[in-house]
Image 1 (cartoon, rainbow, N blue to C red):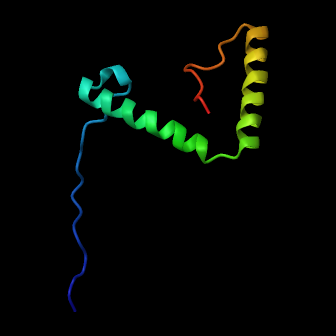
Image 2 (image 1 turned 120 degrees about the vertical axis):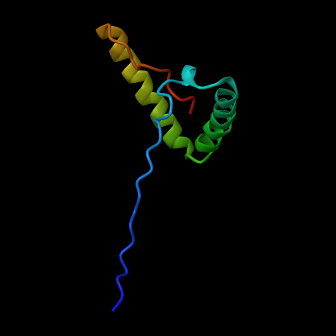
Length: 80
């Protein structure tokens, strides 16, 4: 009988930067390009009624936040 166990050696890598401004310019440009393509692709995949519903929800949330004096979001909403 043979021993079929395999030894696994962990690989430790550094964590990626937490903020976009911490990336180098080439990486930021690539991420912005990918993001620019992803947003329309995701939006095009959602039914019109879903997009309208999300827009109405965001409008309600924005009004609530404005009336309450709290920020809506730490970042702007996606444009879909």
